[in-house]
Image 1 (cartoon, rainbow over the protein chains, first blue to last red):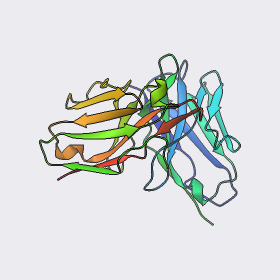
Image 2 (cartoon, rainbow over the protein chains, first blue to last red):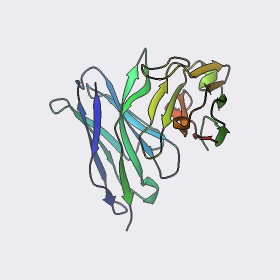
Image 3 (cartoon, rainbow over the protein chains, first blue to last red):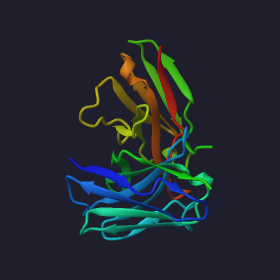
Length: 120
Length: 111
């Protein structure tokens, strides 16, 4: 059974770059789509972007200028970088497998999430 | 303001049936894109509850059912149990935004 685990710094200062890694265990990262999703405290969910194991990516248009998602198939990991963070980027960040039918579709499973706080 | 609109909260007594609506538009649900539902228990990550409108993953009780019609979808929970108290989110794809979108979430309270 595939499991995902996020890791990375939990506290950042404004203007810094958020860097998170998601480690996939119990299955291969190959042949699937992998996404990042975030949830500000007390608020709803926002899709950030996905990466295919081959390296192709798609990002939320509202975040596209600041987001980079990369993959390391040798380590069964994929990563998120979000530049120039502000307090509005404070959220729990989840990684998830994006299940594909004809197109990338629903998210399952999810990692447990990691809280990233942006504060001076 | 979420692209998919859900009621902020619903409630019901144990054993009752509740429904949670998810209203979209012609650029998402109404365009034929499928709807998926997630359950988020307090302090935990969302968990897939329903996929492709009305399909339950293994392990999800048949008390949960989903439907889709026009620009809306619904999640029904029958035989409410205390353990169903959680936030529920719908999700689809929006062709105008070129973005996977979520509803704002609905908090279910079991009275």
